[in-house]
Image (cartoon, rainbow, N blue to C red; front, side, top):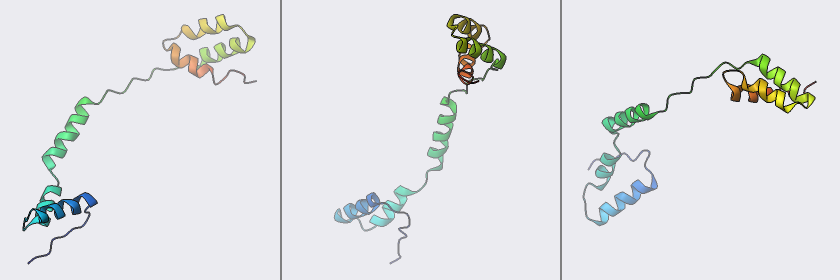
Length: 107
């Protein structure tokens, strides 16, 4: 009788072996090992599926730091309308507005 390696088994593997023994399978450990074997095709398919359905990274636009500083100066003066007008002018108003927060309240 040869010994079966049980390296890396989980509690579920031991439970499966015990159930197979109770069902009177003579090769219970071998069946569990066979079920644990890596399936290269399945793994390759999973990787391919993940790569095909991965969202494309968003392109980062260039933040207009001069406009962000000018908007922050206007906000520090209390002129919200002027700050809003400055922030809305560049190509990326959202990024410029977030960049302007770095300079608000800074002396």
